[in-house]
Length: 102
Image 1: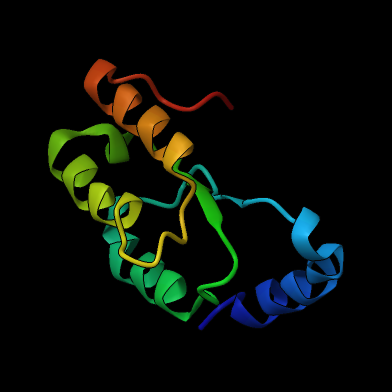
Image 2 (image 1 turned 90 degrees about the horizontal axis):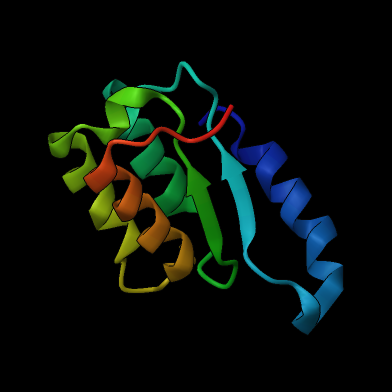
């Protein structure tokens, strides 16, 4: 899977922060569309459960109702890999159809 090795290396370095490590932030590129949902799902499944992760989608198609509903699943995954505060912000943007800045 593309970029997983680099992400794991980054996580290894950041894990030196121990209990001070908060959620990590993954900003997807502007061209990363909902057509890549399975790629994102595979990446998140491979992500270590002990590391909380916030994901920012910027492609405007993610804010359409169908894809917003699919992304909702990521925000409520049982092992809480995603930060719930950012999930609430994502859902506000879906409701208001506000794309992420950038």
